Length: 423
Image 1: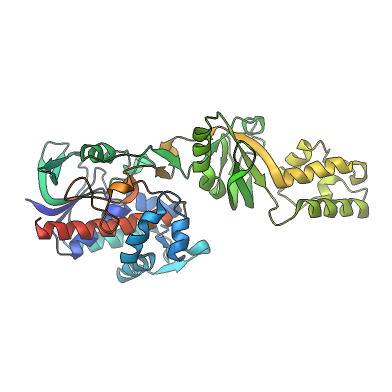
Image 2: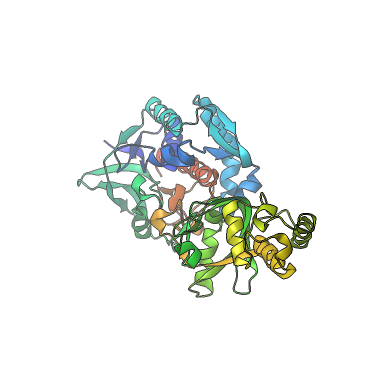
């Protein structure tokens, strides 16, 4: 049996590509090496599936620091609003949460997966699971099909590669597609982890005194060797037994990786401003006033509520202040150094957890070699790429999945048109 379009990979971009090709009337085969389709989709958004983001397109592109601008053409053809309309037509009602994040009303990612699979069934898309692809078949400068690991060859008019990157490998993203892309003449830009927890050998991390502590809405920065912020993200963060994590840190992680590489460093500095809405001098004046009004009160009680208690005690100790000391006994100099730490607690980090532990893969098939309106390979006719195998990466918050759905839609639809044209 020959197909018009073969889609390899049953993640967000592959499912969308198969649906798009099916809607154009193509005979589609969707192949996945895992035992079930949509695994990455089912765990996205903490199992609730952050389907897309409703921010304006310019804002979304800003949240995709890895080649987001490449997606402008794609958004003009199939936008985040089109993604919302697509799912609502499938009967998935969506709701908007903070920062424009869109979730199914059911709060269940599986309902999104089931709706997509139902759509594929309705479009008579054939699916193979537990079917690893060993290689892509090319002939005369064009893609002509796939070779499965079991030795069987399947021919097609066009092939869409949607196998993901190298992050979250338990969902099947183990980097299989890079070698196929190289065989077709593509450049793979260097792979690195993004949206990944950051590691540190600082004594306070090793002793785990802050392990498990969350700080809410703090400003977290990665500093260059001169101590100037390369990036600052204001969100929540978390101290762990190996370093730091949480949204602000995940977003900053690629800058840690890039700084270590750019300046050939073993460590870079990160900084936490735990009170980003307050000016340092005003903070000092406020504390000095509290001490003056209640000189006999202990520092710990005077400052209660300024910061989470564990972080407060940690910074007091770092400033050389005894938490139980009366305010009147503490020098202004020490109070000043405490205020500086509230605004600029700086510590060294030495990298990130490995790519396998990252939420997103940085790097991939160079977008310079991909047609932005169709996701077609510029190197090989009838070959299309979509999703995380491309060198496109965004922050968490519905941005990567939006890129996957947009590129998947374009790749699947374009592959079907190419196959129908029989070029």
